[in-house]
Image 1 (cartoon, rainbow, N blue to C red):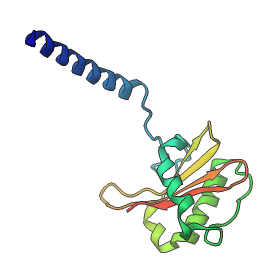
Image 2 (image 1 turned 120 degrees about the vertical axis):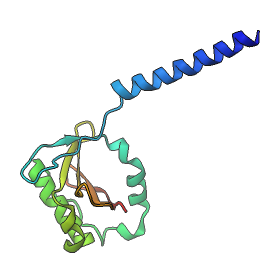
Image 3 (image 1 turned 180 degrees about the vertical axis):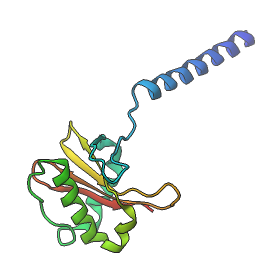
Image 4 (image 1 turned 30 degrees about the horizontal axis):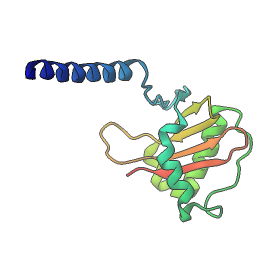
Length: 149
């Protein structure tokens, strides 16, 4: 009886492990923010849900009220426009000096929610965080702004 119970437990654990592996390989999408090179205009993809914690923090943070972040930036019709406007807002908030080491800025688009994500990059040998901004495509509303540490 104990042997059968132990075999059952092992079978359940192995099934769970295999299920997680299958999910990670086939269903979990990686953040494909781009570019990683200065002259690359590739647009990556992301899911807005991945950043729900940052959005909740931004919405509830008194520091980032209307006086600190510009109003809607207008319709964002291209990745280049999104990057230009997003970086301009980030520089206004964090300063040009803070962001100079975070270039080039990568850009990604969430097709379902129609929002742009622009974020800095760091060289491989540098530790630290980068600035991020999420902007709505339809009217340029800033959904969230934050800087990792």
